[in-house]
Length: 146
Image 1: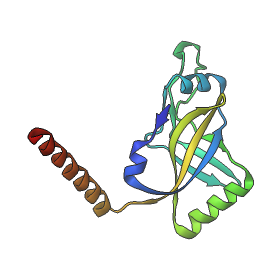
Image 2 (image 1 turned 90 degrees about the vertical axis):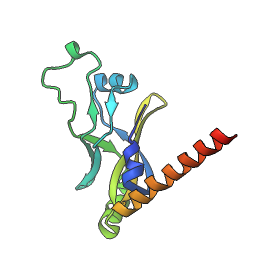
Image 3 (image 1 turned 90 degrees about the horizontal axis):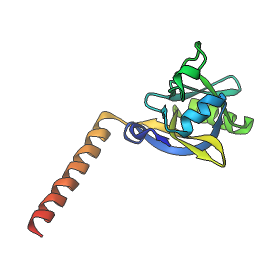
């Protein structure tokens, strides 16, 4: 449904968790029709609750949406207390970030795949780009000769 491709480029994903999201009915319809974006979204833990911020959900039917609706509002993530405690501990001790990777439909419910991630350094990103470009040029030369 919706994927955060930049997450794999900017972060090294160490562990993943599946979480539900507390949504309103018209938001569910909008997400199922592909009107959601995870670009720039991040998850955080406040107290004993997990939240996702900056996830944009455009209205399914703009004229039927309540006038006070905010598409980028903070939404609660549905994780159990053990998972939240484990994630909070990892984030504090190992200096990790909780990044939403993918938004999908599972059994009629909307789920988000969260990743415990460590930020990549600039030189790691450059090395990945260089490796990809070398692969592309090699593929091109083999294609033209073959």
